[in-house]
Length: 156
Image (cartoon, rainbow, N blue to C red):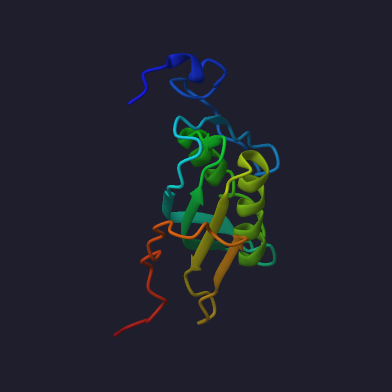
């Protein structure tokens, strides 16, 4: 394992008390160099308590997000990702927009070898909405586990 604190020198959030953001457009995402650049491996972030607001009714929407990516040069700094995701709490957007926006922001920041996001949204009005997006095809031979989130079954 590489012990090199200099790769963290430019981070502004890690180890600091940071005020959240009022909306995702203002939220800052940070990245660090990938210490295993050139190795195809999957990094996964799971956010089982993601929240945003319905843009029409203002009612809360809830989702279980799973973010998988094969890093290229960079890794997303996890504290900045958490703060970015919480910036949606008072943000009104449809499920599809939230999910795809998160994916595109991370791809823009990281330029990963491969990326996918699954947004498993809980029902509103009796209909759950699941949203999936990925950037391209993963390299052959890379172990990519299933996301492991079952579709909504209701009572059962």
